[in-house]
Each structure stands twice: as C-alpha cells, then as structure tokens.
Picture (cartoon, rainbow over the protein chains, first blue to last red):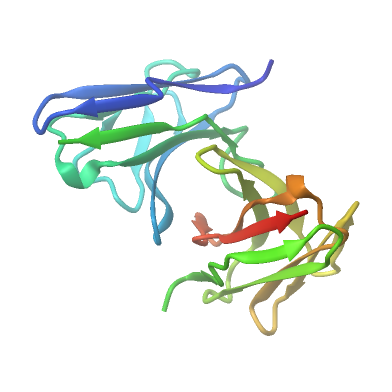
Length: 115
Length: 107
C-alpha cells in the first residue's frame, strides 16, 4: 500500500531533550516536506527536500533540523525542544514538488507536547 | 492580510443540504488551487483540484474566479460522512494552506 509513515504518533517530552521524528514513504517520491499545524494558523512548512541530500528551509525552520540521506526517509530533528514547538506535525511527499497538479500525500501526523 | 483566508465556520447543516465554502487568496500570481479534506486529528487528503472552468466530482463542485481571487467549494446532498474540515490550498511558488472551514452534518 502506498503510504507515508511517521513515528512516533504521540510524544511527550521535556524542554531540551533532543528528539527525532521519523518519516518514510514507499512511493519513490523525490519531494518530501515537514509541516506543523497549530490552531488558527493552518499548516506551515518547516523544511522541504527536493531530492537526496537537497534540503531547504520553509517558513518556520527555527529550532528544527532535517536530513535526506535516502530517498524514502526524511527525519525531523529537534535538537533542544521548547514548549513553543508543541504542535501537530505532518510529513508529506509528492512525486516532484509542489508545482502544477501535484498531489501531496501526508503522513498520519505526530502530536508533540513539550513540557 | 492572510495569504489565504477562509471562514472557519463551523457550518452546521442537516443531511441532504447544499453547502458552499469560500476562500480568497492575496497573490494574483498564484498558479494552482486545491481543496483538501481533513478529518479530526487526521492528515489532510486531496479532495479535488480547482480549475478556472470549474470542475465537478460527484456531489462536489469547485470554482475558481481569478479576477476576484476567489475559490469556492459546493457540496450537494450532504452526508454525515462529509463532516470534516475543508482546507483551501493555493500554490504560488509554494503551497499556502488556509486555516480550514469546519463542516458538521447532522441527521
């Protein structure tokens, strides 16, 4: 089944404790991205990757890191989480990017609470 | 002004009703337009793309008015299963998501 998976789905952590949220897709998509969703703000892009070893900042990259060592995986790293990073996080992928009629396929989401 | 604006709702409608959602966008250079559906606490999923000529998919009709920078989604014969949040998405050089309009269909 074609899908985007994320782990963990739920995470409670404390300020400053490094964490990684994994994202994997099995559709051979070149483009992957991370979003956070907060009430009243909609989805905002954190980072995106056009292909292996090619990553770039989205609209809200502060406090986050990413890597793209393999085509299928795009982990999101919070080196020193803070309470303002409490949010619902979605990984997404598409064949080539966001142009034209490209459909974005979203993972199931990771709900993060930073105390 | 937000780049993509939607009425947050909620729209509470009975089964069988027709309901319309609107969305406005600020960047006249926007190239493509979509409606995504998001069920509570779940991921967004593409509902349909929106074309200038208008397009229909079963009970759903989407319209784009480039001159007014306005997108609409019409749902006819609402079902209980249509209850969700509908996200307007506009593509300039990146995807801009609206905050969504919540629809609740009651029996």
